Image (cartoon, rainbow over all chains, first blue to last red; front, side):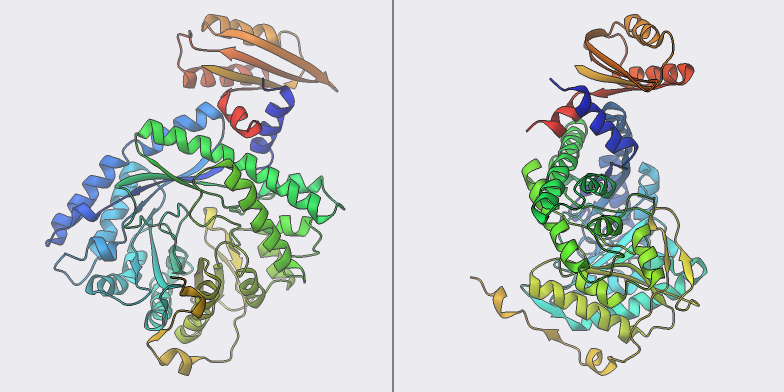
Length: 452
Length: 89
């Protein structure tokens, strides 16, 4: 039987260490909504989302009450619109973005992901229309998130797309300049994008998925930090063991919530995403975990090794706790959403170059980084190309969510609000890469991708 | 269905009485109680069976929360599964 100490441990994790289930994300396929007439398509999309997700928020709240654990976000991901809307005879999908925004508002979710395209090898007509619609869609909606997959280990990197991404990011920044270019915070560029990721802004419902599915993202950097405080001065074996056990406990809660949500909504359970996702709250930070391991500041030598072991132990503990692990699964290092990261940047300990190295060993990539608004689109494409190359060669997911804040310079602060946090503008290399980005075409897949 | 009730707060007269009265009124059966006082702080855990209760789980959570606020302690009811899944393989 459960004893008092175990109950107390769980409740302290929830009350003092910010243990929560970060998101229940319902994936909804829109492939059956296809229509030549975009108005009819939009109506079908709206009807399907509002019907399928009608009880999502309410169910999430009931589960919160039953187990006494906060479920921070309830969200929706849909089939990439570049695919779902491809049959429409139109030259813009902005109206579909508005439809998604309205549907999200109707069911009460704060974000809906899937204004996306998968163009790692090339663009269809639908993909091209989608890309052209992204800046306006992000500027005119508040809940819609967009992502584009421009590379994979199997296909290489679509450098035409990479070039275009720099332009889209610049245009989005300009269209949302009144709000610190916040449109870019809802846009992610991926290499090896997972099709079952429940986390925004990169969530979309892959074409290999069921019609509707529940994916759950767990979190809990604060719990890991607290646990390893007890392992101060111990060797790496003890440190790793501590993280692993904690990750197991965190993931089991996610698994429980996922199964309960799946049962109550009568929607199949997909995966648990074992990510440690920070928030700007004190004590809910990845940087603080790295510093607790013995670094003076995140970014100091040793940071990449510390992050590598954290990421690996989180996975090892997590896979024991759930049979179906997927999504991004690892540690997130978004700068603006992590108080410790922000402080490390302000101290001068953490640079974009060090963050790039860290992305080789953690789950995502250059995430929520604010850079000067006058950074050129070619430079942004260069940063994206580097990150995509890391993902492609290492057969892992990498992503770029970068915000060139119009009118801001290095040293200024930007405030995105809520979970998106705040960030200091970080310096970017001023050496140019225009001629490299101008080449166009594709970078071929690496030799070790030929495994057949 | 079994639930775990935890009560944490500054010790005072009648905490258990008030919680148990509420449970009795709602036909919730108490299966186990353990309790300690550390440095004036009251810490109690109860295992309860709510399958015969005339209230829903959510309603009980609410009314215990309200009672806790009246007494000035934190009273939580949670489904036992969260503890079982976290602490048992």
